Length: 404
Image (cartoon, rainbow, N blue to C red; front, side):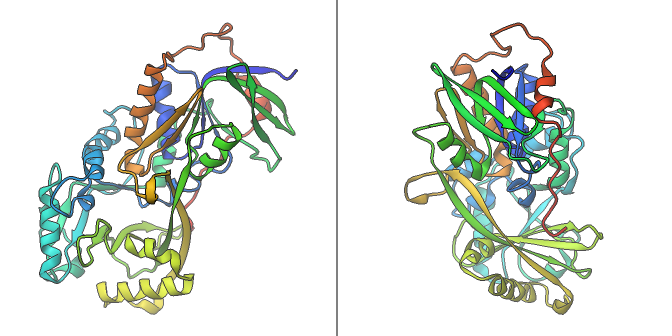
């Protein structure tokens, strides 16, 4: 019989949502470990644009939707954490920009759309002055400064992992075929870890699946009946070039779509060269295009937006990624973070990076409802961390942006 390790919570997935939960659970006194098969932040989180927004783009009809209500408080809540005075300490996280902007477009329709949205958002939006708006948009229509901001996702992931070296473990980090399997032990599950470094039986009061696209496979492996995932594919674009000015901007399109035509965030590559990371409707519609066609469409958008940029001196890349959500009728986009609890498993989806605190609230509340209090109610709490090190000898690496 392999050795056994007992704990309160096992988290699967080291993205922003899983790491945020690790911080909340550890602070509340829960004995918690996190397992990651790839790199920390390695799939969805590192490829997010890092926008912590308050829902304006969901409120462009002039009234709150479910999505705008759910996310309205997020900028203030995140700012407290980054200031070191919130529910978790993110003072080591870097801000890419303290503000985000929205350009209504050259026509009157775009201006009305932005105005309606600004009236429906807690904190509102203000007309940007010429000195603070991107220079290439001056005298080209209304530009609004939103109550949103942008975090550097790489530093965010590091800040969330800080201080948890004894709780975060890499599964198969040495390239070995480490397997995780769930086996029944009466009404409870046990996690069996088998690899080249040895075997271990892990007993937890709750298993928390927060692995994004991996949630579906984990749910099936655990024999769950209810949770199902849906994927929302995107084809993101990065463009690198010394002529690109620092820009954090939603570009509105025609009509009252909740999705901006184009969303731009600025970053720096490993050589400190400016990078524009492009999302919005461009990325959603781009899944039907080849990489070459997507770059062609993006190039035309930027030529219209920034005609003075030297297009032939820019380097273009595409990235296909999947946002993972709980399945909903007709594939409708969920309004809020969501979880599904079945026996001793909780399957969790943040839906958006900015909603990670809401997801943590939901999980903490679920644990209270289930009567799961901190402190493993089993055998004596001996220091058995060496058991984990015997099968998980190395910590996971940190993911890097794809343009690096």
